[in-house]
Length: 163
Image 1: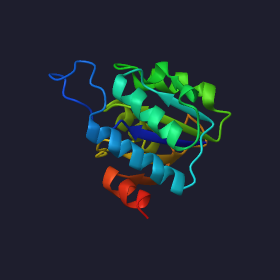
Image 2: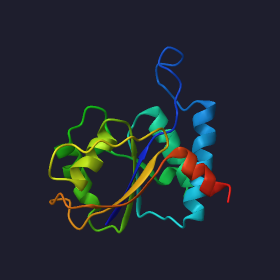
Image 3: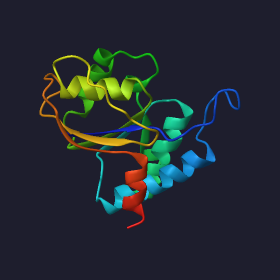
Image 4: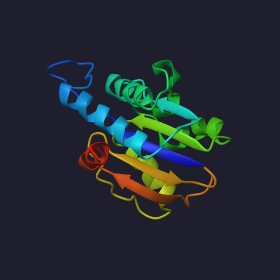
């Protein structure tokens, strides 16, 4: 299975809006990211998102940019704030039959999940800026032997989108 993990786009500060939706910059960022993903030929069997506002908005922009209906994005309990890696992986088992799964959430969970899948040693430190997207190939969610296919930050995705 290929897992595509995305940190949501730039959001408004909590002082401006306590729900922290995407900022105008974050919305533009995600539109470009969706264009880049389309250029790259990405497709997904499932589009799963954290229930937080910025992640839901990010996932919907990505879905629509790739030709999916916004309603194809599913709120995923395994990405709720405060969820442990163990719970996230247990919830993710329903997707084991899929080839390609998109997960959009927040830090630190997205980075912690990537670290858990990629290494059995100490936590891997990943700098995931808003809108970063990484692809991990996994044979089994039971093992910690995933392989990093690639990691693209927002500026790299914007360059792909403009090509």
